[in-house]
Image (cartoon, rainbow, N blue to C red; front, side):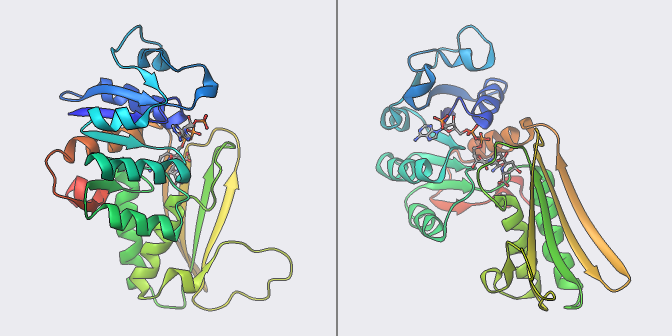
Length: 265
Ligand SMILES: NC(=O)C1=CN([C@@H]2O[C@H](COP(=O)(O)OP(=O)(O)OC[C@H]3O[C@@H](n4cnc5c(N)ncnc54)[C@H](OP(=O)(O)O)[C@@H]3O)[C@@H](O)[C@H]2O)C=CC1
Ligand SMILES: O=C(O)C1=N[C@H](C(=O)O)C[C@H](O)C1
């Protein structure tokens, strides 16, 4: 499988290069970055302390989409929008891990999925995929007297909040409860908030240090609290899921697939 990586010098980009190189049947065909990092024209081996991998870093995503069978994208929402357009032009499959996507971005994904095969998930780990299923189930089992809160902590460099994973867990909780997340979500609290309204799904965000990604879904009622927690301790975790998704996409029909599809859950 010929794999390209956009945003290849980022935290996830580098983890993805390492993972593609370690994957049997995967061939790294190139990566893109923006010009300011001084990496353009260099071999991708530079990114992971290896001599040469025979794949170049460019700022020409069009050419990368032409030669790759699948492109992996962990960048920014704006970059992902332009990558979606290129994927539709070239028919290239996509794995999208970028978070902070808007409602309109999700509509674009749905349109793109009519033409190309894409896997999109805010968290590509096995653990969070299972946690998402558990959250849906527990929310369906627990009555409305259980208040649902999602707590997340990430490293100091993260730019979007709440995390895509936290929002995905909130979405799963809302589905379990049979409500619409955008009607019950509370993403900030500050000042005199008044008591907690019934049915709210709250989100709390912590940022600091080098935390890779911690998520806890809390079901709290009078006298007891049930907490479901996932902690990531290595970015390799997400890269493994993303490269698995890229390999899985081979010969897939157009569609918007999730990690549940990739993992067969
Ligand atoms: N789904 C999942 O499992 C996971 C998702 N993520 C998400 O992945 C995204 C990236 O995270 P992370 O790697 O930590 O972030 P980084 O900022 O380290 O990496 C993003 C990279 O994309 C580059 N980039 C931005 N715009 C473009 C463009 N137009 N063309 C090419 N490259 C571009 C950036 O370059 P520059 O330096 O010039 O800005 C940077 O190198 C985030 O949205 C994060 O939330 C992260 C981990 C797991
Ligand atoms: O930015 C990160 O680092 C991460 N982002 C994803 C998210 O927003 O949920 C996934 C993971 O937790 C790491």
